[in-house]
Each structure stands twice: as C-alpha cells, then as structure tokens.
Image (cartoon, rainbow, N blue to C red; front, side, top):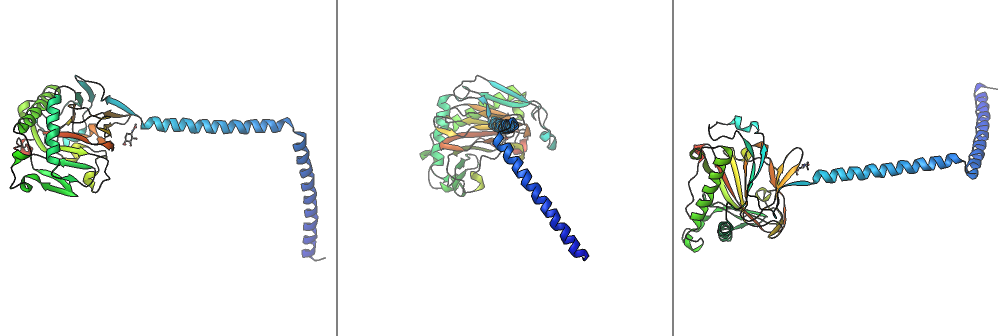
Length: 319
Ligand SMILES: *[C@@H]1O[C@H](CO)[C@@H](O)[C@H](O)[C@H]1NC(C)=O
C-alpha cells in the first residue's frame, strides 16, 4: 500500500465512523424531541423571556427618545404673564467684544411679559407689517420688512421699499400715527431692559436689524427662508446685546408650529407666541434658539434689537 492509499483508507474509515456517530446523535435528538424533555420547556421559556426583555428594552428606549424630543413650556399662549423670568449664566461671548460698563450684560436670562405692549398696539403693529409686506414678500416661507433701512423681502431677494415707492406717498401705505406707536413700543422695551438687566438707559441703543417678520409653511427658496436653524444672535450680528420680540399673532389660533425655542443642554424651552407678548433675552450663546417651522397659518412678529455700542446705534424710523 502506498502512503496515499493508506491515508485514503484511513479517511474512509474515519468517515464511516463519523457517519455512524451522526446517525446516533440524530437518533438521540429525535428521541429527545419526541420525549419532550422538561429542558426544552426551560429553553423555550428562557427564549421567550429574552424576547420579552428585548421588546421592553426597545420600548423603554423609544420612550426615552420621545421624551428627549419633548419641550418644556417657558410661556404658554393660554397664560398671561405679568412677568416671567428665567435666569441663565452669561456666556463668554461678551468678552470677545468691546465692553460697555453699565450696559454689556452681566446678568443674563430670558424674560416674558404680557400686557406691557397693549393688544391695540400689537394690532396696529400687525397692520403696519401687513401693509408693508403686501408690497413684497418672499417666494419662500419667511419675509421681512425693515422700516429703518427699507429692506423688504421680494421674490428670492430683497428690495428697498423706500426706493421702490419713490413716486408713491408712504401715507397711502401707513397711518399717520404708525411711526409714533412704533417708537412708543420700542421705548417701553428699552425701559424694561434697563430695569430688568440693570442697564443705564442712555447707554442702550436700538440697532440694526430691527424688523417685522412673516412666516408661513411655504417651502424655503433661499437660505433667508430657513428660520428654523438654531443660532446665536451675537454670532449672527455681533453688535446685538439684547434681543426682543413682540408677537403679533397667536400660536394655536392664527398659526400652528412656529414656537420660539431656547435650546439648553438639559431641555428645550418654548415661548408660545401670543398677541402683544414681549419676549426678551440677552443675545449671547447662553440663549441659543430657533423658531420651529410653521405648519399652518401665518405668524407675524417684530424683532427689536439693542446694542451697547453707540457706533452701531440706529435712528428712529421715518415712515
Ligand atoms: C433641543 O433641540 C435641539 C435642536 O432641535 C435638538 O438637537 C436637541 O436634541 C433638543 N434637546 C432636547 C433635550 O430635547
């Protein structure tokens, strides 16, 4: 016999042995199955248990994810807040810029006040916004009207309302006392900032951009329509120190979605727009925020911005 033949012989033998073994184990397992040994129940029970645990873990995980998406309400549309304050520690952002003692934020936070801007004033501001925006309007979901610079959204960009109207009298668009109401509202906001944040009034200045906004659910056409990205005002406009908003329409009545959201590490806090509601906050990264997408209806507001740097002060509008 050659070595090769011996090897093959051996292999055959081994194979035979293996087959025998297989047959026996097959018989055994067959027996086990037909005899329904209690171990099988144990296995089935433990398998079911594992399945239940997996499902439970999945559901708990799902609940966790869902609860993470939950918002906490800082100001509900249905409530009237004489004054609601929410303190946060100031970010380091203010250190990157020239500081103005008696004005640059040293206490930071958020403030919601109802009733300071009367409903009548809010309605008049809304009418100004509607009248002005009727002359333009973005193709997408966000339009602005700035009555200081004249900037007005139109199509996919902006025009200057004052130049556009060159030959037309502004009196045909705005009421005689509109500008007075506008200034009066601005002065009331300024007084609140001064009082609540310990700012010397004469050191605080209205700044650019101060504008009306109109938001709806039209798909964005340009980046200017994308108002829903979280941002920091002082990063976007470094001159900002205090940002204020006056809401001119009601969340849940005039529109849905469109809540203002402060993004904190632990939670996201919403301010639900309410006619005449003033929302005020320091402009640094302690107040990262965004506006939720409007899902239906039209949301109107005015952003009134303040700086401590007199080089960036703007005048009262003249319209
Ligand atoms: C808060 O909102 C941001 C931006 O939408 C999101 O990334 C974050 O997960 C939210 N945080 C919580 C705690 O819900």
